[in-house]
Length: 408
Ligand code: HEM
Image (tube, rainbow, N blue to C red; front, side):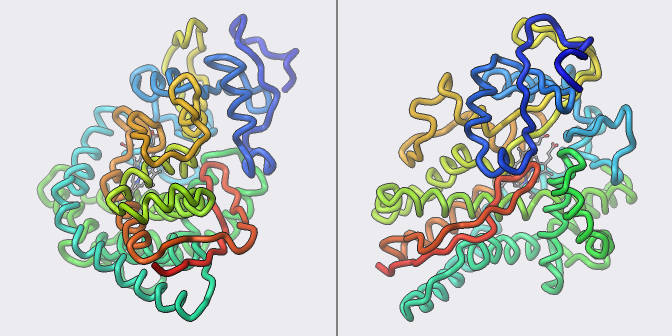
């Protein structure tokens, strides 16, 4: 499609001729984010025939107006009103009220702050055990890969344990997550490659959503208990376990990986954290803002909607660029700076409104505990090689992060 053939484009909407899912943009998205914000409160991207917004005010508005900007037509590029979803729709992420409310009530009770208090001790012990091992390795002078040896290992241990999965085969969760988050974008090479790997993994995931595979009392089993109580149907229970398995691992892996990357690049911030490990929670929060693990989500307009004075037509796809909102100079002072003394309240990295991340207490707990365990043991962390990126249509992800941890 070219800019000459845009009959539905409302007058005055700026046009941004860019592919947000091209490799070079995904590798370094910040120049594109700045162009998007500068273009206007909303822009039209001809390559995909979509609207996009990267300013904090409009991203927030879109996410908080679930009646006009719906999720049931998909939160990726595909419009489920026009094409069938590639997998049965999520009962929570890709649903609107009242269906969304039912599923959300169950999951938010299971992942409540009260639950988190119960798992905090185990999650702390696991973080301590991991960093004790890393301390021993670094005393032997070994460098580590911050992604493989911290960011992947920890969430793959604690979260599936809490859900109640057996230890074998958990690496499948990473392959599955990579595909799911690629599938929110276009059918490009990235998705094709992820989809090739996922075939055998999908069968494993679906099998592990069944009650017989889940430890009694874990988060997964608690979903089935809600079905026993009649809050959801028995058929819905495995689908909601699937939501935990799709959304609960690759997100935190990258949230933690990106936090390590921020700290490795900002020795002064790390020194401050080492001096006062109680800043761990804030340091993690600030890295969510600056290097948002989940960069984007789409909505679909339910009717003609006015966004910043422009009438967006019904059934249009709107890309909410969370990561761009998180660096909007209209919202944040010195937005490109990693500042662990900042309280980045109102960032969009965990979404906002009725779909705001239901696992956020768990995500924050994992991030905080990893950074605190690190800060208590190590005086400095140093990059000892060039990190590599794992490109994904939705996630900001590192493939490797070579680090040397210097013991305190
Ligand atoms: C740093 C880690 C995480 C990030 C950055 C993240 C990000 C997000 C974002 C941006 C949304 C909003 C989706 C939308 O508006 O359409 C979301 C929703 C969701 N997240 Fe997370 N998430 C993280 C961790 C987790 C964890 C640990 C879990 C599971 C325990 C989880 C489960 C979910 C679910 C089920 C939803 C859908 C909620 C709904 O539609 O009501 N997430 N997450």
